[in-house]
Image (tube, rainbow, N blue to C red; front, top):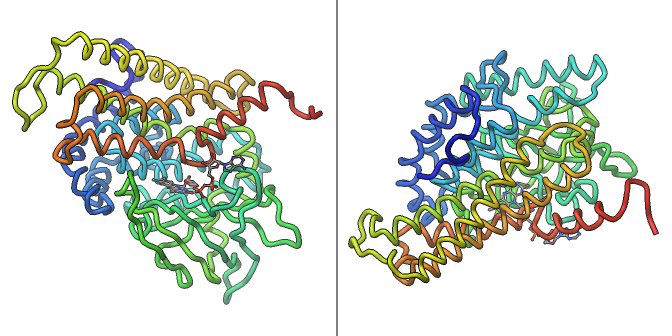
Length: 411
Ligand SMILES: Cc1cc2nc3c(=O)[nH]c(=O)nc-3n(C[C@H](O)[C@H](O)[C@H](O)COP(=O)(O)OP(=O)(O)OC[C@H]3O[C@@H](n4cnc5c(N)ncnc54)[C@H](O)[C@@H]3O)c2cc1C
């Protein structure tokens, strides 16, 4: 399969090693993808493979037993997985970012010495669970309100409480679209500290164990695409978690969301991978080389050649922006890099679906049969631009506003 970065792109030895590891798992993931999609079931076997390969700790710092991947390295591995199974890459995003954000991203944030010490203690416990026990984390943020778009406080609340000798928090609320529901060992929930007036500054990021009393999973799951993510509804009714459940100290998530915009681009590598897969499929199909199909060549028609050329141009435009965005990623990026991050997210999400659409049109009717992966790539690719906080619409919204207004300006 086409590599995510293309040939002769500079990669560190660690990036090369991790990408190769992801590539080695890919063919088995591709083989299983159809079953998870048909059943809308979670890819448990793929997670067993990720665990055996030591990839659950991809973004856990090396000094805490992980692979120490930064945002760029994570994204390249994620896109590699996305070429083989969108569902696995997308759910792996929720898990890996549960270690990337409290890990290398949090290292760059301002904290008091007390907050830093608390964070070191708490994250060591979270990371140990991942590295030693193979724990899987989810990221249920969405509530069906303006909160997941970053425009309002989360309606799920956490109130200070004590149970026996344990000080902690009592969580109440509801999360929709919780990918990995039923499969995650911990749900990294964003909630708001209960005060007379809820404020986004008081956002808390808490790891709730999957078997916590008061936590229930409800609703069915029968969507268009990304069916193996099993993104059902979580209901929290007086769920107690101790202080150590905090994945970032109080107030720090709000700082991260303001100062580390690239943290919200981490869904896009999955879709970069899907775009590559749709392109690769088209080339194989037109060459008559897709396994299990008759060796009929269709590549000699000029219309097919033009269509493939259009797909390649779109793919290269998308990949160039993807790689540039990853090079830009840092705390407090300059304005043009922030705007480019929105543009990259928009481009990847929209172009993945456009490339999959062109693939079906170009290959023709037989290519969209369920016996082949293309129709799944098409359905999965449709989901990217709907994902908050940076949906395709909201990326345009932010670019337009931030291009025309400097901070503090209004009319
Ligand atoms: C396959 C899949 C997996 C998912 N997994 C997770 C997960 O693990 N965790 C998680 O937290 N969420 C997850 N989501 C949810 C996702 O991030 C969105 O929250 C969800 O799709 C929003 O659906 P909605 O209909 O409630 O959107 P709405 O909030 O109704 O928004 C609809 C559209 O309106 C626009 N919009 C929203 N708010 C504003 C605003 N304030 N101003 C202007 N425009 C706005 C956006 O473009 C948005 O797409 C997943 C979604 C999918 C499809």
